[in-house]
Image (cartoon, rainbow, N blue to C red):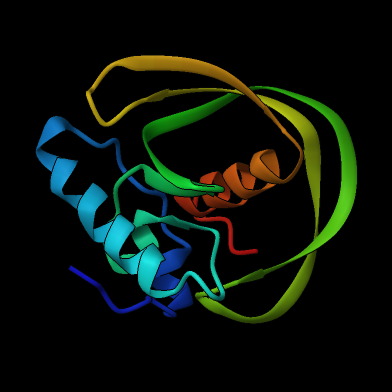
Length: 136
């Protein structure tokens, strides 16, 4: 189901709680909502659709990947950039890292550990910041 985008900074500023298997249906809502906003969005956190759970979706070209309880365990090569957000107006400056190591649970509820770099790493960092209540 396509959900409305949350723009309430008080809600977005709250930390998300861990996701469980019962939250698997949120993955489809994230997928549907991201696809409906594909022209202006490359990733989403569950709190952007009103669900305060640690779940993100990232567009990786031809496929969207849903990640439950993502944790960045390593960050390398910081750089300054500007980012926009579907939940907020305008762009803001922020520091990101060129390469990250991420641990997460996949859609089949299996734990994964992956290294990401470049644009994909930047998207993941932005969405993980949402989960921590950081408004960028």
